[in-house]
Length: 237
Image (cartoon, rainbow, N blue to C red; front, side, top):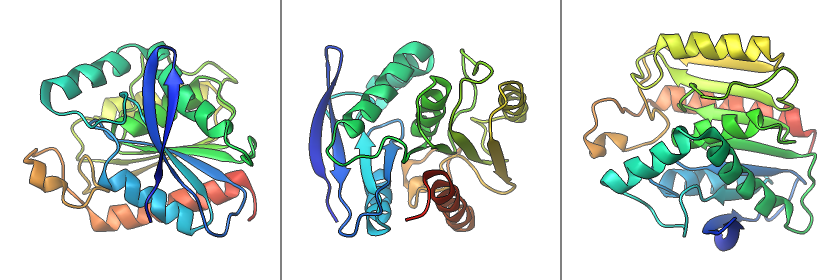
């Protein structure tokens, strides 16, 4: 299944997402945020899987022009979002607004999920008081410069992370748990003991980054748990 490109703005920035329409809609939608480099094979596959289950899936563009980034350019773009939460939240909200603008979208039945940088995007969107039903992070960064205020997060939140992920150390996990508790969020966090960063991305070892390793068991279990939470949050089909 292929998605169709959908241009949308964030202020002066021109973004290009990808929309996947289900053949048998269940009335709910999922906003999907990409990894550090941009919309690629993993996100497209997840969107297609969601569409096959009846969800309208929209891959949002966090960098601009729908163009994947590499090297120093990618690192600069990631830092610009990570270090400026209001900018990051505005960019994530732009994707949500593009999805909401589509005909037939039920604003009460939207979930957001993301991978790596995208996992952080889903959490920052939830922290921004966005009216989404669920926010799911797969091996995303948990640290934020603007923790959630009490009562700010309406979404059910789920985080799936790896105990061996050097980008998400134990201190960040503990701080996130404290943040969620203090903000009275409906949250859950699963730590896979043998999983590294990017554990859901098949073939990630080809990048040559020793911090990243695919874990098929953690991938399968986290996906099943995410789907269960999404269905619980957006209501029956």
